[in-house]
Length: 214
Ligand code: PRT
Ligand code: MG
Image (cartoon, rainbow, N blue to C red; front, side, top):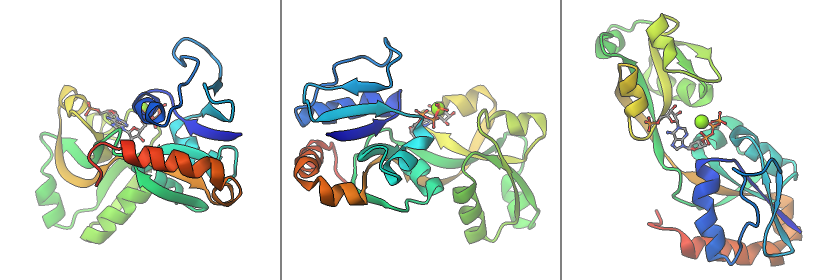
């Protein structure tokens, strides 16, 4: 049996076509059921639904053999114990710095001011500002980052942007693009050796089905 960890929402939705290309059909719709373990048309393959940030942990410790997770989540996790064979080019977005429209970010950076930065992505933010030589106080949040500059909690946020409409709706502007983000296939290193015969065909099918490989 091989177990694939996915998170509900865009990662699940965008992984389905890749599974289909590998001949795998999930037999239940996660939006219509409360089940966390979904069976597929292949008796040897099942899908488990976990929180997006928990996917690397499940795969690292063997709770799942494989998983699909954002580059953002993977960097924050650290990636230890994970083999990362494929960039699936799905769930694409970018990691950016955003501020209130009336905050002069360029000036603050030029003057070497200490910036208060709110984010869920503290590892990425720490590394990015350190590489620019900007001193920051990082404020760890778990959600609604957009609110932080509006309430005075922070000067800036580091968050994911795709269409830009969330920033716009909250009168925030994007001032730096830190990196492009997409989702990767991650594989437990022991499973890759022990279940190679089951996993390799899946890797091959996924790799053929990727649209616009990097
Ligand atoms: O939502 P939940 O708290 O359960 O978990 P999660 O946010 O970690 O999961 P999910 O499913 O929302 O995101 C899973 C992965 O999708 C992320 O790790 C990213 O790699 C990827 N992804 C792609 C995104 C987005 N696009 C995205 N737009 N993840 C989040 N967003 C959010 C962003 O944080 C912001 O709040 O959408 C908002 C911005 O969207 P726009 O279109 O308004 O710019
Ligand atoms: Mg989300």
